[in-house]
Length: 482
Image 1: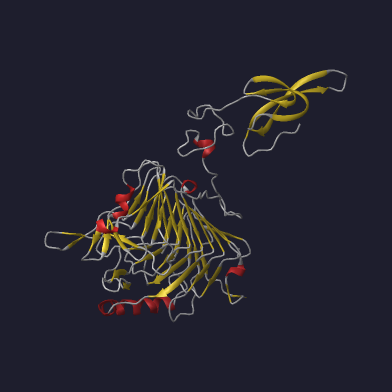
Image 2 (image 1 turned 30 degrees about the vertical axis):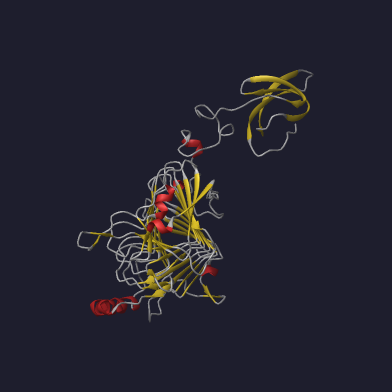
């Protein structure tokens, strides 16, 4: 029996007359996957049962069936596809991963196309003293009923915004209204002051996306807070989706000169104590993103912390550059908990920290002592990327010059390093002892690592010592590295 081709399918049952070998014929109903499109064509004649209704087909089989998917109760996946928060959760949940995947996990990243565009009103929102535009982006988002809205912002401008949010079940895109790669728009959190003009601590993120909402930011520079804060710069919760495309995340402060109208970057005068990105939502996508080195104190640069299991929270990074500030004793650059992470075509590169004069005096003795310990031991506990109770898949990605180590696979971590991954020169300053990977889980929740020996190479030459610190009782290593 042949059927017309299509992309959607559902179940039917077809009657067959079979010979039992003794001249007797009997009927048997067989279940088949066929295309959802009606009509379909069969070869010959058959009785067809679709959801309990029997029709007789000879050649063309016409059955005007429509599926009402407003109520999913009793509907099979072939009739009504999966949606967010689907009540048929057992059938619609992503496939759980129990061992390092050999193929890239499926991450559903769909392009967002605006239905309508708005442009910010510069003159109405310009703070002439700062030469910055205040709250123009958030104002343009308000009051529109379209599902997908684009907000076009001017290049070579600095935007100071209070928390940017997205209405429920909506998708917004913030992007430059004209291409000017040398002078992209700059967006940063607005500073609050008291009656005396003293800067107050910030308590809300620059961007907060939650619920069934999507925000995409394209072609902008996003600055960290320039004042004390308890909030991340970007935050997601619930089923939210955040996409950053061709974006730079920076700790520096940019000022637009009123005479020349040029934007100049200045080093930040404050250490950062909160992440650039804190994600608890459904999906985060980074494409062509650059994260500049930042002096973070007791904080990750990116924190991915799920609550519904790794198959319910996803992170995708492609063609991105992560400049990791080498700081002895610092937290990991990316901390991954209950997330499925795919990183490809990217680089993690350690950067020497440029301390200010006061900090050099304050910490030089401590760092000298730490460096002595680091140079004399083959054990370490830090890494630039930590994975716990999550899945990591790395392809065509380089880890280099990372003084605090490259990767840590902890409790319940499941990690694949394809043979296109390269790790080299990950060691403390003035030390010959490398720090590539820590693999250590627990007896009840071991760590798993799939990696190839060829990944531990420099200039095409495989290093004899792989600098992998693995606990034989709680870490399982496969691939040629194992």
